[in-house]
Image (cartoon, rainbow, N blue to C red; front, side, top):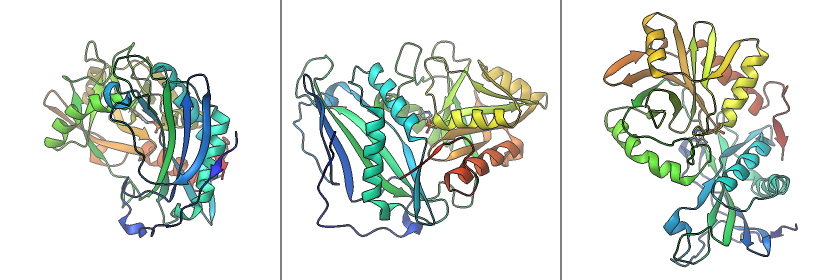
Length: 352
Ligand SMILES: *Cc1c(COP(=O)(O)O)cnc(C)c1O
């Protein structure tokens, strides 16, 4: 499919790298493509970033048929690269299936993304730790009241420069173990990157924040016993010489950082398991001196060491509230590959 191009006549001023933070600035262009039943995906175009007008009746506003992805582009010595973009579009298609949205052509999506990034190449920041955040998403655009899968969609990619997640390197976070609210259950949308999952997470997140916690650790939706994931990240624990992460069970989001960590850990010959793990087991391991460290994994922060857990009023300090050894090693290796400081031994990097 051809991609039509309309360049902006009013390029915006780029923010200084110290002011970037996360999610506040958007590049000059966006990619957009339409879907209509009978016609398929069509009209791929790159146009100036800006408002789109929709009828108030479009279905995404009423029934929440929306999915998204998140990845980053990195710059080193004027070369711009992406980290495993094929994995993101593969996952987007899995999310499509879960929400009755028509699939997209994955390799076309990677090509479209590369073209978009190439046009906004100057928007990829190069200060240490900064990157260009990329947000592909699909929304239902049929104007209709009444529940059924929409017969029209928009697939859109917007991008924007973001700062280093942690200004002074890694920083341990405090996590509230959620025993009341649930994010997802098996048979639901948990393994899809659906906007609805985030709507469902806000209440618990707000309560945890009020109590001084950065994120919540979700337990399974039925027994509230088994660990699922942390807010917007997957989670790992080091117990004795075993590195454990909850097995993908249908209600956990299959993170690409999780997958990359598993591949790295296995390549280092460590004892790694994907299995069911209860929150009680983690507290028991801490009591027996076997809990070495815990960390979250996700695109935004890469690795987020966990310094404290709070479960039913029982507080647990991990790694003395400091950064664990494995957390640091994974962070150094993944960011090293992303920024071209370490060799790309797994072929994760795609040049723009
Ligand atoms: C996106 C996301 C993750 C992390 O996935 P990555 O591909 O590693 O960024 C984890 N949990 C949830 C709920 C997510 O939405």
